[in-house]
Image 1 (cartoon, rainbow, N blue to C red):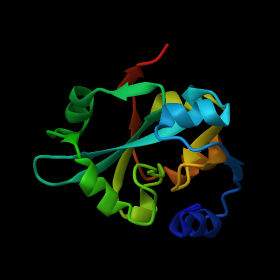
Image 2: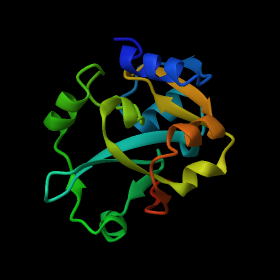
Image 3: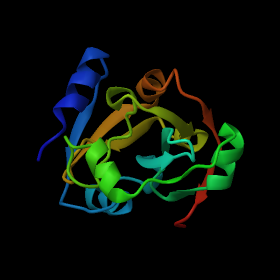
Image 4: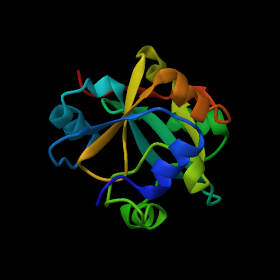
Length: 159
């Protein structure tokens, strides 16, 4: 599978300039950073959460970070947990299994992004497959996320 049509249309409709970065096949955001030879800290990964009330939330963090569910729950006054993989696959049926683009709007999702992503001038994101990264400017990423909150809710997992 190639880049998701939904993702490319969304970026084009919002006049986001992006570079396509091909890389050897990978199965995780850390593996993607390694295979694409880009800093893990600059790869934005999407982690899908669901509250006890069924509200879904895309949490976007650097690839080398892990989410603190307690911080997310405190911030959103909820009881969020990770969504099971089969449900994620259904939500992103236009993407390869596990290649979730960190773009909530084209998938009609709420989101939060970690402020740590703002440390770099460029970010890399999954495009919907396991062999292509998208590079966007931090400013374009912030513009795409303008309706979503940002805070600190993750910590470095890989040093």
